[in-house]
Image 1 (cartoon, helix red, strand yellow):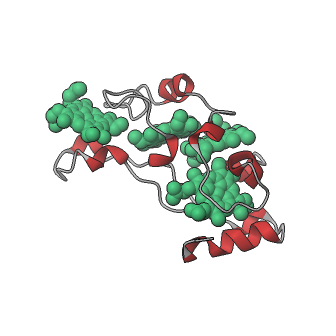
Image 2 (tube, rainbow, N blue to C red):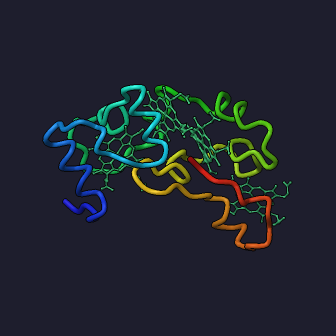
Length: 117
Ligand code: HEC
Ligand code: HEC
Ligand code: HEC
Ligand code: HEC
């Protein structure tokens, strides 16, 4: 079992069923507030591997999130890149990223300077 050190606190929290309030990360605040537990994303109560996008789809779908960010240009949920895995951008336990930057590397290109929750 290989688990990056940075996840250790979460793993321990999961194993001992401590209050999820110990977890602090960007989009986690909303998930915690709505009682989305470890199992909802990881399928197991004590996660040992990264959550998959498929589990996000139990509660979210691309059409709905694309509609929510429709005012953005470009829309991270509706672009030529298609329907990407949610977890390429949304990291949940650490700072999220803008996956588009993997190709759109030019830092002066302001179109990709949005922040992923
Ligand atoms: C809203 C969905 C979501 C919830 C709820 C969630 N996680 Fe995660 N978790 C993720 C995602 C997404 C990743 C992968 C992050 C990445 O790719 O860097 C991850 C990664 C992890 C990992 C690292 C696994 C590995 O091998 O890379 C651990 C451990 C973990 N989560 C534990 C927990 C625990 C414990 C809880 C409950 C307290 C929890 N998670 C709740 C989405 C979630
Ligand atoms: C059990 C249901 C459930 C699951 C599973 C789930 N979510 Fe959520 N998510 C919610 C709810 C409820 C909210 C708060 C209301 C909203 O913004 O839609 C939310 C909010 C969010 C937000 C907005 C956070 C913010 O600060 O604005 C993001 C981003 C998100 N979810 C991504 C994900 C990703 C990525 C996954 C899979 C790794 C996932 N969710 C899995 C229910 C879920
Ligand atoms: C290319 C990166 C990327 C991918 C892939 C991605 N998102 Fe997002 N998501 C973002 C960004 C950036 C925002 C913030 C938009 C803003 O500034 O309002 C966001 C916002 C959200 C929100 C909050 C919307 C709101 O305004 O309430 C939810 C929920 C969400 N994403 C869920 C998902 C889910 C579920 C998936 C997979 C089906 C997904 N995202 C895939 C980048 C991404
Ligand atoms: C696999 C590489 C790759 C990824 C990932 C990628 N792009 Fe692109 N994108 C390109 C290429 C190549 C072009 C054409 C050359 C250019 O304009 O840079 C392009 C062009 C664009 C354009 C200008 C042309 C148009 O269609 O309007 C936009 C806007 C754009 N991409 C948005 C995005 C967004 C948003 C994401 C993330 C959700 C993304 N791209 C992810 C490779 C990529």
